[in-house]
Amino acid sequence: MYKVIALVILCASTFAAKHQCNHRSALIILKRPTYDFSVKLLDRVTQANDGHFVYSPISTWLQLLTLAEGAHGQTLKEIWNVTKHHRLKCFRRKWRAILNRVDKDLKSVSKRRGFMIIDKLMNVKKTYVAEVERLRSLQVLLLDFNYPVTAADIANKQVESATNGVIADAFTPYDFNSTVLLMADTSYYKSSWKIPFNTAYTRSEPFYSEFGTNVGEVYMMNRLDYFNYTEIPLIGAKVLEMACGSDGKVSMLFFLPTSGSIRDLFYSLQRVRLMSIFNKFKSSNITLISVKIPRFKITTDIDSIPELLYDMGVKRVFHPDLANLRGISDYKVYASLMAQVSDIEVNEEGVEATTIADFLISNEVTKEFTANRPFAFLLVDKKTEVILFSGMYSVPSKY
Ligand SMILES: *[C@@H]1O[C@H](CO)[C@@H](O)[C@H](O)[C@H]1NC(C)=O
Ligand SMILES: *[C@@H]1O[C@H](CO)[C@@H](O)[C@H](O)[C@H]1NC(C)=O
Ligand SMILES: *[C@@H]1O[C@H](CO)[C@@H](O)[C@H](O)[C@H]1NC(C)=O
Ligand SMILES: *[C@@H]1O[C@H](CO)[C@@H](O)[C@H](O)[C@H]1NC(C)=O
Image 1 (cartoon, rainbow, N blue to C red):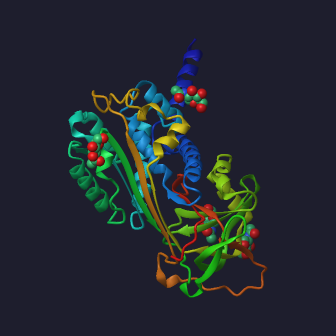
Image 2: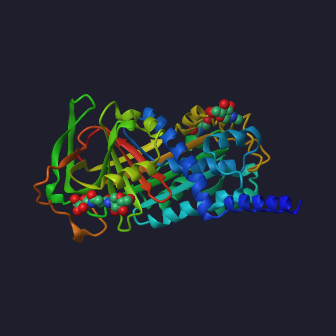
Image 3: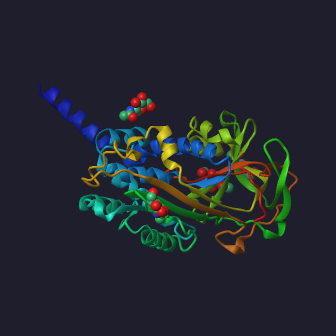
């Protein structure tokens, strides 16, 4: 009898230990659903933007989670079904704290700021605003939607100052017309390599389409060095890692297709984990590679996020009659607009200008990674495997 009780207690306590709400378990539990959501969404963003864009999938994940905090019933179930966020608030808070930490580490080169703008006549619940503020996911603005011009003006000023002027005019007065809840996310990233490219080797070179047609010119950056590099037949691409910042926490992964179209990349990435790519790097050692990547800047403004999410199964929250956001307001509230403006700038610059890499003299037969045709990139935090920014480049310009 006592043995049975002891066994039950033992089982119960190991269960509790396994599911204790702390940073470590939150990371283990939420890493994978966040990645799955991100690549599924990126696949849809790719198709909607013709293979040339920058997007921050983690921002959309957080937008949905913010809505989830105020959602009930089927509306909540649909969001949960797609984000697989944790049902316990404690885990969600821990995960958010981890992500805030990542943002903080990146603050000199990146800024991400989300806004939820609600008509102040909707009597938004104070408990909801308090929870959102506690998560520090985004800023809640309560504005008078009866004056759309003023509302747009106030919102735009907030966005502009939050992004240090990088993003202006995110909203138009039209966005505030006959709606009650808008969400907008703004973010930018400016590359800062661990080892900079030497500008002396940057030159104008042709850029080709996936079919080999010359479609324009780019300023091609050059570097010969040892990199983490691998080929992954499962996704039909070769992958190169370039370390960002001095501490090695964040890297940019570049993908060039070896077979098939770059547009299928995010679909294929659903079959692998970032961890398996990093493990492959480890097992193949660093490789001497001649790298050519264009200097570029992309700004993408996407307001069709509800359509993309609808396609993934999140429907009710965007529906005027079916949305159940009782946690936000007792009035009928639904998300009428969900938008994201992202901006990325990639050039030769590094953390320290003094450590400019020079061409190594080498007799080794070197591999090449020449991004003179459509390629994709992921900016990832290596520990959390969170995709901070991602995008594709296929429309050349001399930036
Ligand atoms: C959850 O997802 C599954 C499979 O994708 C689907 O069959 C189910 O209807 C979804 N449930 C809700 C409430 O959306
Ligand atoms: C808002 O909508 C109404 C009617 O649909 C229209 O007359 C008005 O011009 C719109 N206002 C703005 C600022 O777009
Ligand atoms: C290669 O990857 C390993 C493991 O992630 C890392 O420690 C190392 O710094 C990377 N090397 C380069 C050159 O990026
Ligand atoms: C990895 O590559 C470096 C540079 O080529 C070489 O010095 C080292 O021995 C290699 N290590 C292994 C385990 O192959």
